[in-house]
Image (tube, rainbow, N blue to C red; front, side):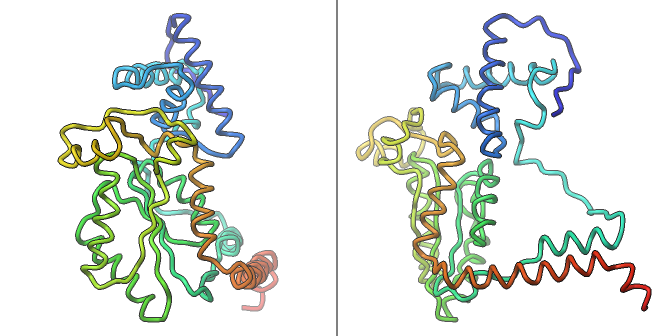
Length: 297
């Protein structure tokens, strides 16, 4: 684990306590095989009443965590920035290596026999990593909306749904977003534009809901008064708002599992999963016997 020191700091006891608590939270997430964004770490501090829920506290935590990493006290791999991935060409040391990788990554559409077509969308890009893990396991497409969806992306999505609808499938969009004035309005806007573009897709907003706020007690924020939808939101929900990031990734994954599971025939899908595993095993066997096979060429 890369605890690497690049600078020396004379930390105050309070800062060392924050670093120790950060490492404890990071360890909890690691046990579940999740990495954290800084904002998710911040919400865990707030939820445990360690720091207040405000911009100043967020910036202070970020500064302490940054210095802690530079001092070699916090694992560099434990906190990730999901908005700035590095991209490039993948390289291989041998044909056997790439064929083995293909075997492990080989996928058929394990939902091909389903009567439904499902996509999962999340409001924020910072949570797309959580979606990736849940949705890959379920074999459903997913997307980060990054706020209000552009017209181009909405039209393209509608065409995907319409293509499945023309094949006789019922289409569903599982949506997760913040509980704030815009977060409540965004799925309504998506549903409206799907209808505008002639898709019959049904949107199901599974998070964040008031019942989930009551159950999981994420830390509240003041709803933005500058949001044009604030007054209507205030009438229905009051002055507070809540961010999806504050929920543990495990909870978000469970919400997705449950929502997709309601629309899935497990027997049909398990048959195709078994077929997929059979194909993978054959491909990997080709890799294992590569030298024998190539001698005949």
